[in-house]
Image (tube, rainbow, N blue to C red):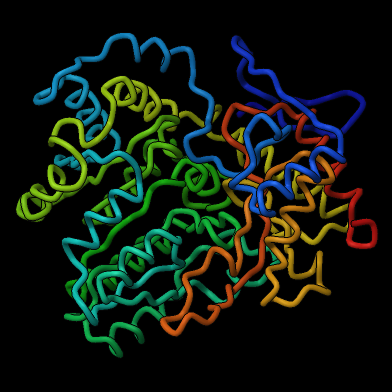
Length: 439
């Protein structure tokens, strides 16, 4: 993204696109928002979108498509088997990642289901830097368990560590020794830790962790759903990547892994997903699971129109001017809110700006869901729908008791190419203006 200077104030993030299609927003009066919240049972997922002014629930499936993506959707090959749309998508993915084999699926959690069904057996362990809700659920429902080994600093709300999503390599070695390599189904690294602030992982950490897995004969899996944000951070924060192109960084990361999967609702700006496999025998061992759970091998539950949009979106995800806007808007939002005294997760990561609910509403005990309470307050106060990322998002213990989350956050997601900076300023104003004494 080019550095644009201003004569009379500090630099601000600039949109590197122009708007061609708009969608009307609706800002209800505060009293009406309170009634809508009551009708929804104080569950923001149950709100009607027409009652929301700024929908910052997620960046999944709600990113704006480009003119080239929309044009691509007009030229699909609508065939049940052997669709050329699939082969165009597959070839583009091979060009970017270097993986020959591709299994299509309708979104990322479907990929997780396939991987869990193939590799997880009762009593087995899956090692991660950090879990995502559905990823963990697919593993535990099959009798497996998850070991989260993110560095301790990754769980600290505020520090200046540039890659808080890195897995702890000493913990990784110790976990493999404790569990036994034969009992580790696979190691999954998330390129941007969703539940703890969208914090990125360094290329060097990917290399070191995968080398350890390879030494022990453990399959390495990359969840690339949030890869485009991670690539931006690799480029601007990691010294060895500063002179590399985004495509070169992508290939450097991909070369470390045996399997890559992703949700195109995030990576690719469309609605779909895929599992990429390096080894042919491994690919064939999962092949029959696609028709069983998703669809035929050349559509995998996706619309061919979406596959064409994804194919264009993959190329766009390799452009620095395109992938930089999200992290820069997030960084701006985080820094402004932090300056106002709002407890934020720092440094800013991907996905969105993350408010530390434990500190914002410190009088609410964790068993009473501080993140859930705060996300409701943000809607009532400003028509802003964020997402609870705390104990409510956790799977309960087998006896039904709460499993308390490591962090209690409210995520204010910033979908790509959707909001303008003036809308971000509105969010900053409402969130900073309603500290706990005013709610």
